[in-house]
Length: 66
Image (cartoon, rainbow, N blue to C red; front, top):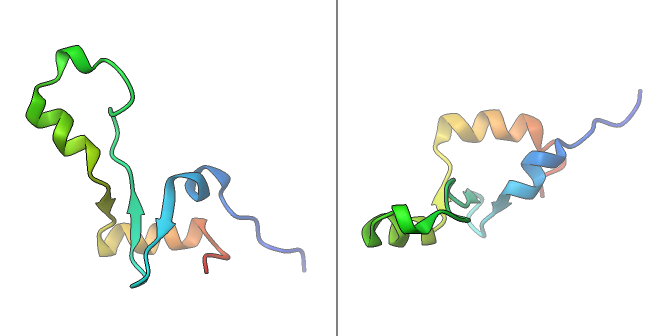
């Protein structure tokens, strides 16, 4: 049986933390900052942790996640 493939798009977006949770950067944080408030831009700086429901779906994409 062939090896399962890792979803490369998901592998680039998600990183596993030391406690085993998945961390990812928020959307809309790369350009067009003139239209965003200071509060919105500040919230975009911090990475987000995936919820338990999302974790189950992402785990299927990242087959060899350490």
